[in-house]
Length: 79
Image 1 (tube, rainbow, N blue to C red):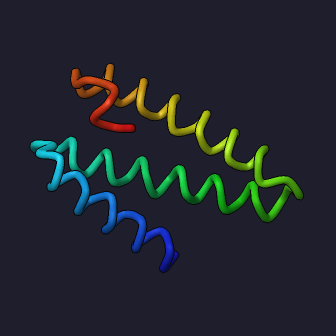
Image 2: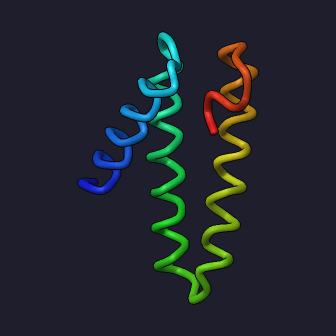
Image 3: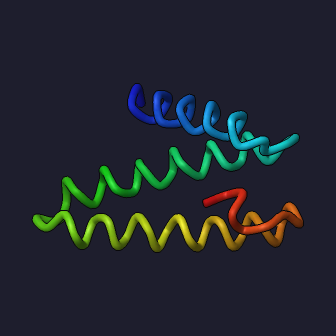
């Protein structure tokens, strides 16, 4: 939980740096935390780091596409 919070805050800082506006900051930061959480679970479950990175990247892509359509923003805001 501590690492999730730190990842969330780091992504929040980068969102401000890259001029992401409004509610998109919150959802972009949340996506980063979720992606890290998925990577952490996969790295504990599977022995190879490559597979864990692949699954986390896939989850980040799906989350980004979903949120871009929902929030009517470009996908690159959430990646």
